[in-house]
Image 1 (cartoon, protein in one colour):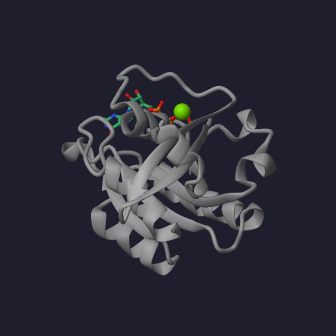
Image 2: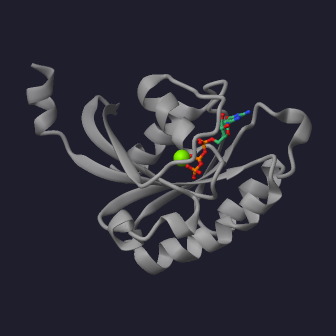
Length: 173
Ligand code: GTP
Ligand code: MG
């Protein structure tokens, strides 16, 4: 049975970080359940979803953790980061402040996380073309400077969401 095979699969903890409202939970629900919610329900506490991915023909278990982007609602920083092999650091391309704050998130990550952690910078809401405040070039060059992978996504349109998660895991594996 598939579940039995998966029990032997390598296992990676992945974390979602970034400001409140950038779309972390919707990226996760789009990826794991092909679901998107227009209404904003800020995450309370910590949740995780486990999904088996196929990377170069091999099953890999990804345990993807999600929490609030409000730092005050995140008293468990150490436990959240502990053991994580990869992170999606998400900003909202229509809100410049969320991009500025990726600097803080990165500093936090480098303080708490494994130095070998693989990080992808994710510019989400790429569907809202007319109000883009952070250009692809600006996002990409920051990622290059900080040695991060880079992708622009839309959880709403399901653009690059699969890529964002599977490429991260492939880069860890
Ligand atoms: P916290 O849990 O508070 O940290 O927020 P979050 O980062 O989990 O954001 P969430 O996924 O809840 O999304 C916030 C709002 O942005 C919701 O109203 C979503 O519908 C909307 N949203 C998320 N992704 C996209 C996207 O790709 N495009 C557009 N247009 N809206 C999006
Ligand atoms: Mg959330």
